[in-house]
Length: 125
Image (cartoon, rainbow, N blue to C red):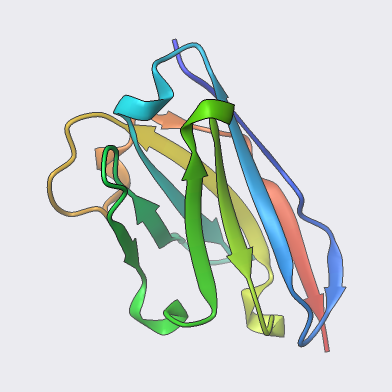
């Protein structure tokens, strides 16, 4: 069983920066592909970013490239999402997810069987 716990979400101002964390337990963290998704009020959950195991290749939603950076520290069983120049439209619940043997379609939810409970980010204008 894999447990994922997100943290770091809070109320911030537009233009601020914030880093979210996802702590993992119950599995060999370094073997997993990890992802961030977000769900805005009244909208579907969508892909934000993913980072692979091993060399740690990264993947981003096109609209977020350059503002968001995903990273992982396997020794700490933790994944991060650094978010810069935050906008009100970034307001959402942010979820971390984990999956094994992902070689493509990193943006598809069905690739990730393990999910955290989410952390709320609110960006005020």
